[in-house]
Image 1 (cartoon, rainbow, N blue to C red):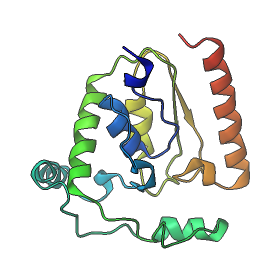
Image 2: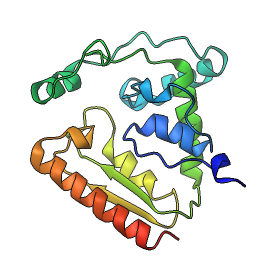
Image 3: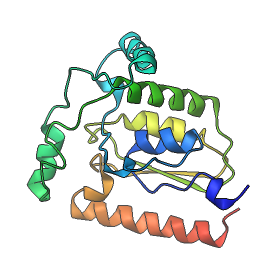
Image 4: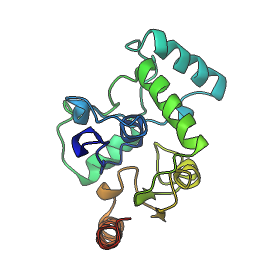
Length: 187
């Protein structure tokens, strides 16, 4: 297998987009980096509704969920950072049923275990994450393979690298330390 045919490592906190592409063994398609998939479907609806949404997405992938993200998280970011809200709308982008279906499929594969033989770093916050459930990340990251490091950053925001300065500095310190170690002993 040529290296260009292999899944490329993704350094991206967008858990959904990374897992959807990475778990399926595909590279993100053109323009995928411009999407902002910051939503854990489990926070929008109970499990039966999510299953229905996932099934709907297999037939109608571009149908959107009527609910939008609450503006709380992006408003919090705006207190600390400046960004163009035309490019990152306060209530996020539409949530497509097809995306929910892809995430559901990817999560099912993660739950069965992936057996990755490469170093994996998974970082999460805690209750401070307004978007994802950190307990899911902490639990299911360990099923990715045998060389998984799971790091918690209490008080960090959803986008850990956008957290307040002390947490952000620790995130980068741990990230670079892990990367250095992974390069020294990659397999």
